[in-house]
Image (cartoon, rainbow, N blue to C red; front, side, top):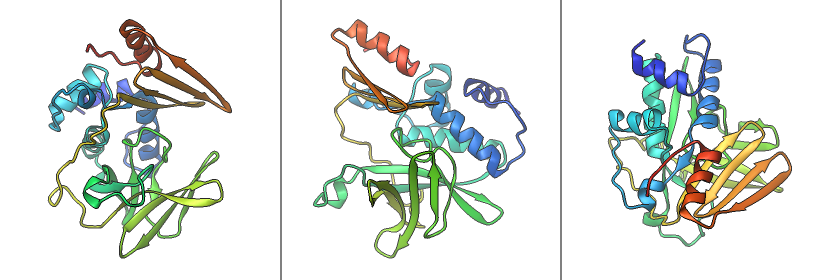
Length: 248
């Protein structure tokens, strides 16, 4: 194992056997989500983004930042491949909070991973940031996946391809969809045009979110909202709730 992989595993606080298995995949995915936030600060601050592994590794592991779905899942897929997993990157259309009449070219693009374990594919995704599975989900039409109070379902049709749905009250809501040929060779990353500064991270008891100067702390059934009034307060809150440091 090279030093970069050791550094990566130490950073997400993983200890244990590294023999590829569905159990190991789930442990790595969960550790990653509890350590590394989704954040779009480089995009919101009009900074450049690189999808090269050395650059992503430096940004996220060395400089202790987060990233968007492309950065996060590209880096995680590299880790998995280095550990011996069979991984395919897939581009998806991200439907959460998208209006029904949104033109196809304006639907946010997402990246996820498909991991092949003994012929069975699993969705493994560390790039959503908000509520989404923390464990691998088998790619089987009709399969329902529960994590605590969260319930997800896999479905398939010709129009949308594979779909990951989330339970919303008493109905199913489409989270994202993708086709079997939606791979790196056919698509190119299309970054979100979101101008708001956003960060999200899972915690053991809930999650932390940030939009601009408003921080929301979800723990169990409770919600605490914290608003910063100065840049100094904002940077301190970013460090406190997401363990990241960024200079504007």
